[in-house]
Image 1 (cartoon, helix red, strand yellow):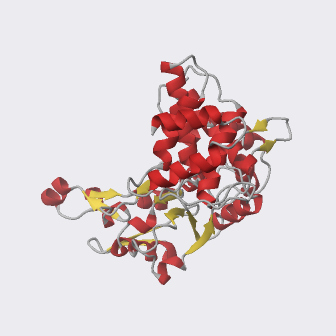
Image 2 (cartoon, one colour):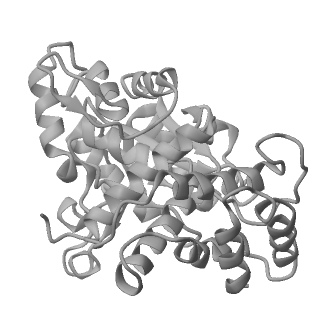
Length: 359
């Protein structure tokens, strides 16, 4: 087992990528490691002609993934849009790993992200000593992806200031990065493209200009459609993270996962699963990613402070913190849900008592 806390996708799934590559006899776009069909198989899972089982990395619509992969085979960049926890980052990493064999050409968008993170910077010691020169340039992940024909990833694009966002327009439209200081330009080689992610709850932070938005094909990643689909995602990811952390705990029972996901889905939707009771919605997103975190936190409690079996008290400890984000309004919303829904459900008395003890 690797000593790394979290391996990159191309490391963690190297064996799968190798097996898929062997079985992949279809046409590949320039510089792609796999064909579009093989990339989609890697993302969604399936059985190869030789019987090898590929594990699913994303649970959702096949057509949506096919559209994303097809976009990256054209000259259009890809924008993955969705609420927090819809696997935008996870999907962008695996797409880059399958296509380029390298998911590390990453720009993390924040309010402080500067233009040099998208274009290039300077080694100021060399700049002062020698003046502007190619040797004094410090390539950004986007510039490296252009020169190597790989996929660049830009996370949280709408958190980057509009001025820095605009630096992408020439790169995406002309596939060129001008370097005015040297009177040269960096031209992208075949295989280059960009995957950006954005949280659609961040509208108004730094809206994308119409000029930039036109350079992207936007795909909205939905929340899981069904309870069973979300349970599958939470179970698989929690198990994978538990193995990486080497948590000495049993896998959570199906019933514990069902309880957790049901609570998240009901509070997120503002209505119980049977549609009979309207609910107030708390301030948090209650995303699938948060459900995975709550489950892993419960596993850690069970492993290190319990008997290794995830119980209601272990689940409640992280569950309350996930729901109650706003100390002004959320406690009342959570208390009402406990009293009107959790308390009345058959077989949920232990979870009700555990949540009441936490507060």
